[in-house]
Image (tube, rainbow, N blue to C red; front, side):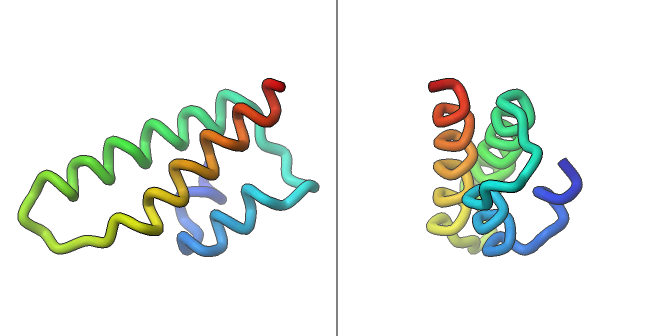
Length: 70
């Protein structure tokens, strides 16, 4: 989890697409929920923040968990 949260956003997206990572379904879902709520919180405040890369991170984590499930 620390690898996902403390890397840059681009490195985290690359980590999701790496085949040799040791991610579980629960870890992907927990990361997606944490990142979703932090993105929703920063979007709801008056702080200027981007939404494109956080959207990619949420989609990559959700896609990783669905791909492992299937």
